[in-house]
Image 1: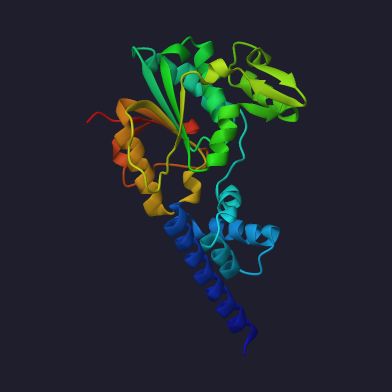
Image 2: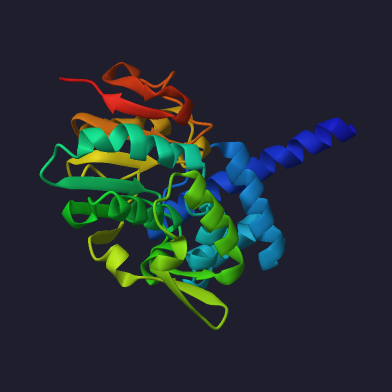
Length: 282
């Protein structure tokens, strides 16, 4: 048999195995990755297969269906948990200088951080709002589909060797205080002040399967939709649109855009270079 034909046949079988594995994950545990960008999912699943010691995806599917041990470990591969505090400092500076003057006019605020990962963005917002005198009247929803990530976010504990980058980002984002004011250190870890999460509601929420749960003035969902296919991106943006109050704000990641979204007409550019949009009236 021709080598190219054999290779194509092998890849076709692998694609079927992956489809069946994702279907099993959804039907057994209700985590739906079936409409994530296939190239990204395939890359992560291959990494999981190799590092977890499975011979093929069919063996992974069997382990997933007949025991609960694999699902938590698999979620760590399928959900991106890499971030840092005040990531893309220009984004947070734009929020501080251009968005917050509008949000100050509300008697109370609701902010939704969709895909909060280990909480780096959550604490960034909490510190920014504290510095601007708005934290006490802001309710923050921090959501993710990975229970382990939510638990890490609730703990507010980070390795000390990450603090230098966090501190630099904070200053570049226009920080008005020292980041060290917000954490204590012990045993090689930094623990952020629990007061920063006093106004936070942590919740399991999926942009793939769940519905709108609150009206917010700001939604921040960064570097999540780049892993979705186009229909799933449209679903997510539709959720954000329906979650936002009139003239509310949506922040996306640096490589994300609403330009080709089915809901693009519902938003206007607010800070174009930082991917911050404003919901139109109506």
